Image (cartoon, rainbow over all chains, first blue to last red; front, side):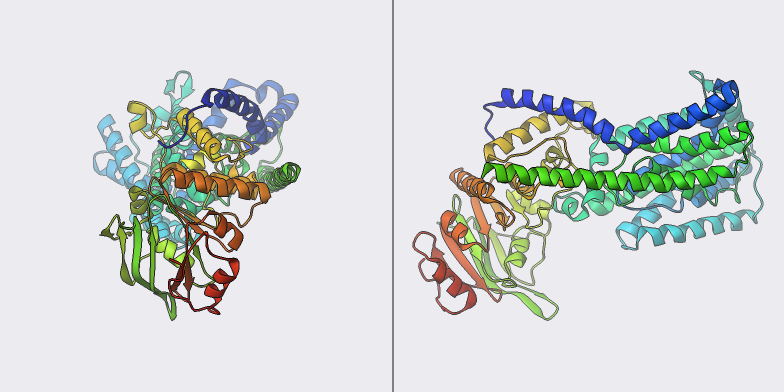
Length: 357
Length: 254
């Protein structure tokens, strides 16, 4: 950019600042996540009015955050994948496989002690990373559609986990891990949600502040454009799926800590729940657009509904009904709103052009 | 004078279609060369080859008199060659600044830069400056490009190319979707770029625009260069004749 004139910069800078201040407000209001946060608050108010302190208590929200923690870790990776206009159906199975691998390794090492737990963490993360890289390589290099690749690895990872265990859950999890989930509090936050919070913050920084995140958006927005500007699209996709797999591996360990057992049969809907949360949070399934913050809000809606329904004595099965409806409504509202925004911008641009002739 | 960028007898086939058939092309620094031809004449294939997006079957490309093998766009970019494609190749969800710097973000200072953080402020400043230098009207630096009009997007795409190219800018149909005022802006900025000593390849179906800005005009037909004309001493009729084959001239005016 050496060839560009520098005069008038001061004037322009001031104009830019004005521009950015104005549009910050506009951007926040324009975020799907902003409206979904409103929905979440309304839901919380509703349960607070009906159930009072039984709903609105530290204990209850601590419980809700415990339930959200594993999905949140998966959701961060899923947000990256969906922003590239991909999908990862295999996260639940990768979680199961990784937890089986970690449990087997820890069992073989004697089953207790902080060192054993540390090796288990490494095993779970490496196993998840390996699956993620396999997904990414098949999507980016072999060019098989992500839906098919991850549908395949969903089946393969779960099948292998069952082969490894004979289909019977492994229960020998070091007490260090289960204690971390049950008793440890860091800054007043229980262990699992604290780990999830760190992942969310780091994921948000990676997505919104770094070159890696910028390329993730660019690939989802216009893959060909990204390639032409010299972005190594295939490599980036492998890294994105690798990240999702790695986080599924971390999720596996959190899940082991939470339940004290592998959950071979218990993760069959995890992928869909996480995807639903990401999409409710405003991430576009067509790629190019989304936020980590939205995903977090999107995760809390089903969790809060579940907890609220139990407390006010409604069958918790209604949660599924409500979440499904919110999902469709959220995407519908988002699409119409964005289509309207595009139309008005276009016609404004056209109008300007006519005016200046 | 040796040409800055030159293609000698380059060929490329797609299946049975011979898109380029021993085509030649040359351009010197500070020169605007029009590249014209009917649809399917091989213009797009030629510029893809010149910009490293396409491998050639035969023939060679010379840069500054030396043969080069351009096997990736990045290689071409490193030589100072930039292309503005007809479909603009902008990422619609990103804002103008992010688009201008896509793939070439300015790292933040110090350790943060090594961690992949970017200097957003500096990028914003430089992008704003390059839009101004071009006379491009950009409604907002922080709105997604997809929400902007065709003229604004064209301006952003050209500003991006000019910001990075210091040798050759290839413009593929830069005025196709533009109104009168924007067209004038684009043609003005083409001249401004040329005056900086940069070579501009100008591809267009609009003969008046070609005649207005081009120093030389090279005509492609059926994958070959069939004629080269001086910009000033040529008429629309001559160009159309050469494009369609009605007038079989060989290196007519030049």
